[in-house]
Image 1 (tube, rainbow, N blue to C red):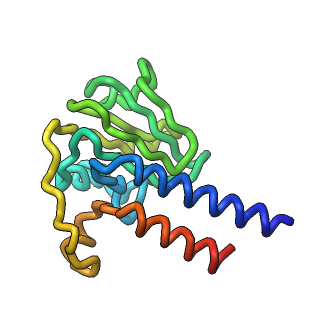
Image 2 (cartoon, rainbow, N blue to C red; image 1 turned 30 degrees about the vertical axis):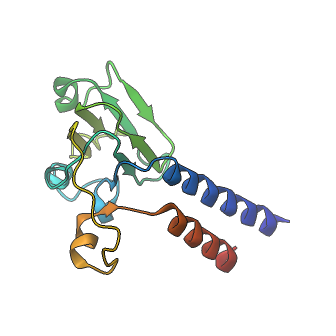
Length: 173
């Protein structure tokens, strides 16, 4: 019975992910922190360095990969509150990882981890959301291209995501 519930939960998760991607044809998924995800950084400038190489625009989505209870995401409205790692005047708080945040307006956005001293040691992200989208890659681009892999942008066709989820569910559930 537990195996059947796990199987159904996996299929449901796959369906939700596929619908999220299928429901939004515009935008790029940015995995915050690339391979490290959202965790204590190796240095204070890690997330600044990551953001500097990204073109983030309205319609894009930030994917924060973290474990619930270990990290969270706090959004504040100003650079002053961000620099101070201040928990006053919070715009949003996300507790359950992983979290996907859709960027719906242009302008500055400020995020940090509000657990312990994580923000003070550099687990914080300031981005500028542009009104102009970055050029989309051609549809026939080779998936094995090293440049595409190093950009950490996720362009996923809904049919590919659904197929991958189905294969995963059949093989591992």
